Amino acid sequence: MIDLIIADDHAIFRHGLKNLLSEEADFRILAEAETGTMAYQEILDKKPQVAILDVSMPEKNGIEVVTEVCRAKLKTRCILLTVHDDPEIAATAIRNGASGYLLKNRTFRDLTHAIMTVAAGKTYFSPELMPTLMNIKSLRQTSQRLTKREQDVLKCVVQGFSSKEIAAQLGISDRTVDTHKTHIMNKLDIHSTAALISYALRNKLVADCQGSLPLE
Image (cartoon, rainbow, N blue to C red; front, side, top):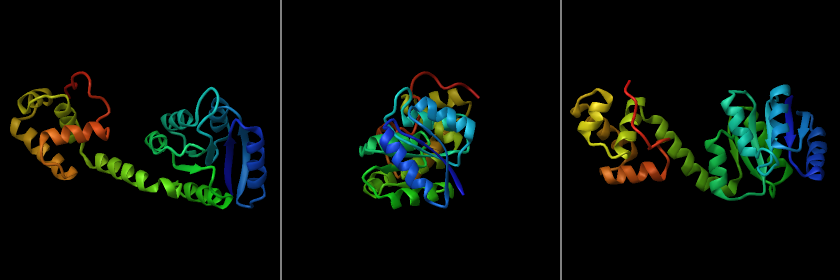
């Protein structure tokens, strides 16, 4: 049995979806919500396995709810069920921790499959968005393959520091900095510093490129 909450500001759609899911033996609806604030509170109180959230809701949108769920380290996995087919919106949802992103033009069986998939610890996204999302997933995995020190060096490179300045910032030798840069470029399959900076900024591989990096 998979415990669910449903959040959507359109009452007819929300109630219809609740009725359909309630007829499925594998699902139990714990609560429904019409705003993002209510949805997050229901997640805190009921601790469902899966939350089905609209993107556009009053008070907090679905992505903001996902962000708060992840920040609070809750175990609830979130599916965004939406009319928004913009890959950039989907990408933002993924970066903020969504486990699923399903368009409302898909079938009810697509939704039940998405719920089962996400509840099993996997991810599920609308097929028409997969080419873009697979690229984003690949970029995120590439970024995660960089070690903490490589990420520190990459941040300094993006900020425009020379190898000598990076060495001073991090308390390592110039040669070690150059070694880290070589490893980063090899992992990303990039062959110049200019290209590395452009790639890192374009794909948001460094979270913050402003200000100096604190010494460890």
